[in-house]
Image (tube, rainbow over all chains, first blue to last red; front, side, top):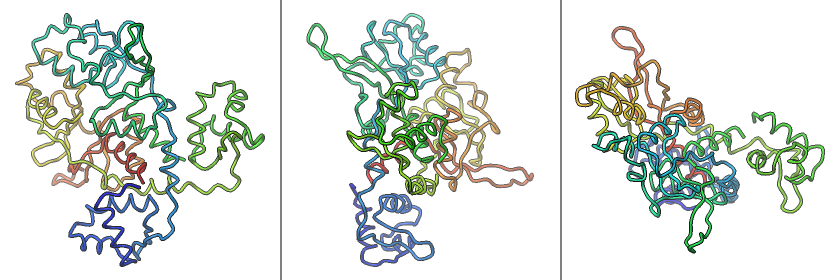
Length: 211
Length: 211
């Protein structure tokens, strides 16, 4: 497990002084109990600490490597992706907005005629365009989209954890799921085979919670 | 664990005929291996099935109730919520759009003067308004927001799993985190203390994966 500095510090404190309550750990770190709670949850979840009600936290000498994390790492994007919501580069901004409403998605994948990834367009992009001076019926969505190669992508084989990290770190709601190939000019292209979103992660999270 | 009909069927098949490969289970159900993979992942994760490479799936006679789900159920919204992104009911639609861009959020919580929940406004609502004939500088956001009591909410004490279920089932990106109180007229009101989004779930999912 990759511990943050604060989590490592908490583990040290519990090692030295168990059993120790959350309040006592917080006092030692000069933090509030509320600030500390997520870290304590994660450390307990990871099996590094054991929480005994009305007693306090113990360090677990022989904690097993977390089976949860291990199993999570084996789950692949391809098994939990959604069908892609796509529009062609040549459709107007207005048509893209309509497509976004009718498909009820937060972003659209923009493709060339042959389903090859060209870019992405988000609700935010469309809102900006709607406020601007563009003629929404005339200007193609290709003009306002975020264009390749500036697109964060995933593949069916990628672990969902890595895809989740991309979504969180790059602050995007959706990743196109692609399969790479080499075109006739010898350039690398990406065929769109799905999309992977924070909604997919939320559903998977629910499935795990039911399990 | 609440099994779906298909998952229960898979368990029956594995009980009868283990070890059995994914392909064989798929053939018995007249489905493709790919269709089945998410179910097999969830059942293995839940500890009901055991997957042995190059052998197949076994049913686990004495599977422990899943420690993962048990621990997940103890995680509360209050420990993983974000600070709320709010605007007052009286600000114009244009000002709300600016607030949404500057705060980089997918939806805004609309409050009365005293931080009491009045409604929610999403990027989708703002995009619709921008396309319409409203004077964005003049019309207050209160006119286009989704208004109480039609708002899905959560509380600091609610398990994140229940909040996740609300987000997924109702297809919303964000829930206001509230604390209820009774006002001077004897009506129930909700003070906004945070927001809980699919991004919060994605981050928690990452934390669990690291654990």
